[in-house]
Image 1 (cartoon, one colour):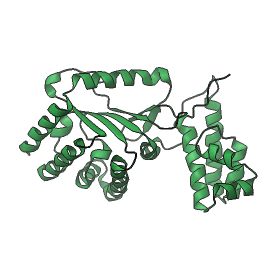
Image 2 (cartoon, rainbow, N blue to C red):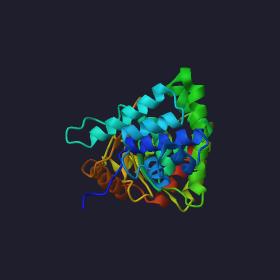
Image 3 (spheres, helix red, strand yellow):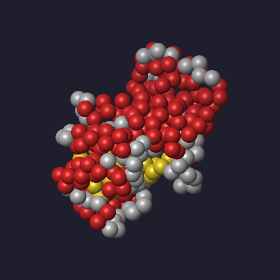
Length: 285
């Protein structure tokens, strides 16, 4: 028996897009399957990336859903590329889909997030004023639009922290992330108070890497590890630069990140000590 199918981030993005196309047409799985000649089970497996999608099937669905030709052709090209990636001569993944845009949706699907941050707080911890200040500093011309999008996503993220099956969050923050005055003292006071409130949730664990710790694993390299409830969806490591995001998916490549995150947790302050330091920094603003 061969290895069970494990979808790549690209294949999961393809499945998600197929689901979006169907919902835009307001078709149920059974109605869509009847129109294209697929069983409901096959269509569900394609949308959930339980099996690889064939380019011809994606093309057929695009016609049935009346998707504009350029968008339909792009997804077919993505599907062909995903199939090539499974061959020994596969090239790099990530050039045909928006890794940064997909991250927000992956985070909402995740069962747990482990994040290491150096000088900025994770998105799911940020308050609106902190988000707006970051957007203005990074991209002044698009700040209003970017901030609006991120604040809307923040509301969904906030719900994930407190819903029936809450997202489990483990974070290691460098002390610099607490002391970087984003948006001014007033904003930082509100932001740190919010951080303390979140730390009281049973599913949220915050550890701070103090300046006094000196050198530590993964120095200068923030990263996020996402885990998922579906047994066929492996853990993935997300990395982001100024303009591009990327995913580390193979067990051999993501392993070092897992090891380093555990080491970071061991070196950082305990959750109780971390709260004390956060309160201390709060008092300085």
